[in-house]
Length: 240
Ligand SMILES: Nc1ncnc2c1ncn2[C@@H]1O[C@H](COP(=O)(O)OP(=O)(O)OP(=O)(O)O)[C@@H](O)[C@H]1O
Ligand SMILES: [Mg+2]
Image (spheres, rainbow, N blue to C red):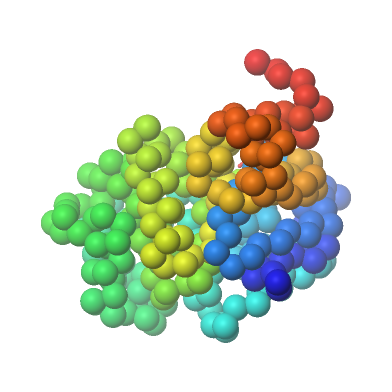
């Protein structure tokens, strides 16, 4: 089976510092690819290169999608670009018009999909953090992308917000056959949504492992990803 998105010897250097080193990630269609690694490991840098926000120093990104050109990859990197004085729909309209893909019905469908159609008059500045993240994902869905790149979408959310994002990711996979790369430091949460994991450390991809392989190795333990992460990144030493 061909990779849907892969990087080939991808490098990013800032001066003499190598933020991403010879990275080869493999994402297949329909994968929910969980990207994990310590602070500063290079997760956001990798994601920025994949979506074209940062140019690689060397190497390449190969996308085997049917849809070509812009709009194949949607993203939510860092905090969503939301205007607090506008409603969810107005935020969506602004972005869609800027992308040249404005279609009112499509935007209303997306808002319905992410569960924000029930607050048509509320200004986004008054949204809860969870609602803001869901609006961020809605914004990323404009233009009907095939792949979503989500950088720590549950960062700062309370348990309810985390569950909402989790359910949304499951729904994106089930109903839109979306391929998703998602980074998170909450390993127990990531284990609930992703079917494959890439572990990066010091700019290098240490390992790619499927959730099935993890389940087998750790006898179905709900803490399997954390155990594995500690084994791989810290050589088995728990630090706290
Ligand atoms: N524009 C930049 N200029 C210089 N160094 C940078 C730049 N962007 C990132 N870096 C460095 O590259 C390394 C990787 O950063 P990156 O943000 O990709 O890490 P991360 O894995 O996303 O970390 P976190 O878990 O904290 O989000 C860090 O050492 C960071 O300081
Ligand atoms: Mg980051």
